[in-house]
Image (cartoon, rainbow over all chains, first blue to last red; front, top):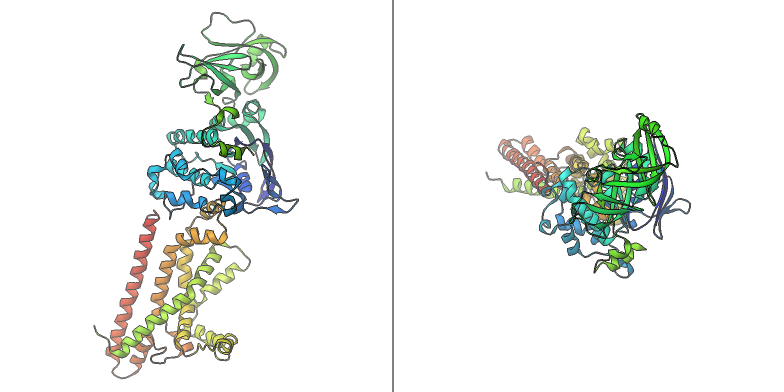
Length: 390
Length: 231
């Protein structure tokens, strides 16, 4: 568990943010540029001092204005991957990677915390850095630089890793190249992370807990499914980006019928997606604009997905539409219908409806979710996991 | 081109005194450059102006102030003599001190320009990796401002070879002790038949100056390319 409650006045910008998040896992700080995300991570890292508040990671209190505790940044053991990598230009890749590793306090190099250390060769292999080891930072591509920065932070055996839009300075291809590494870190070493982003898709792919920020304040927080229904999200991702995110389990992969089956709540979704394994946990985003509502059991349609449910909420939205929430049994989805359709179908809370969505519409909106904690063990990293779970 | 033994002595003395002056001012110059670039405090502009004062003052004024402070009856001078039996006036060390004060702004300037290009974000990164302030300075800041430090050393050394006014005022013009190349040149010009030695020593000074500036540029380029910056 981590807890952050801070206030900071910087010029005319006031940050007053508070969140609690489970640990390990990836906490996404999500919001538009300039909403205070980066300031918040700088406060957590200790690079800026809060005016008042509390910062706690697990059992360790790093800042508490009430008790006069302010652990200096160099002793917080919080890894930081900056947007611009910030590799040391006078050192080669190995020198950069080992910079933090060499500075792990002797008291921590042995004993309990030693278990948290991941061996050098394992990190370089995992991040694909073995061939780059004697290069200098200016000889690396943007993606390679971010991987080195990631490895450098990890080798310092951090209790928490902060990632400040690590993909923002990369082009689309490089982003796709780096994302799997982040997923590996999440699933394999279970390093607690705070991931700053203004890209909703990155949040959907990586986060286990989302903290939405706006104008220096936290407007909503919770797991991805809950936050996906939050009205706060609408102002950030826009009317075309909203939609419920459901977590489910793959019950059949696409090999047989060309469509994978994913169980969400009481229903089953048929999705066009390859490379899924039976039993895998996934996250499916059902964009509100892609959903069709029927008030009778539909027949003779090409649509593969029809989920029966109960309308629980209906609220007007822009432009001339209604946002409708439907409980499909253990999960809630959100559909956008025109004012006209809502009137003609007499949509109101309590109404029985069928939610229709094309398998084709779900293509590209399916993300592998973090494996369930129990089954995530990888040989050799069990001790590491145990450490982070604390 | 051959120099007479007396001229050689002046040249050697110049080289030795400039070396001492550089060694003396180096740690202070690094510290002052760091303070001026990285610290914000009231009176910083005044401090900055004070550091650069020798650039605009007549060197005689600097020599005179040094006499007041470090002279036999000056507050620091008297104390040094009493406590450590160190005399600065009319000695090589005095000449080195006068040279150091005069070339101090040149050295600070070179280091400062180089430190300004060092991204403070790198120091923050080092901090999150567990490096304390002194560690950060040694492992990140110092190596990255190395081009400026080297350039500062070389230009201050080259400039130190030619210091005249402050040296003659504070340390006088004593053959074999404080009569450096420019002082010997001046003395030669004051005596009949001194045109030959004066010309030789002037040529010598020009060559040294050119050498110093070239070396400093070459070093700076090398270090920059090693850091992956365009020269």
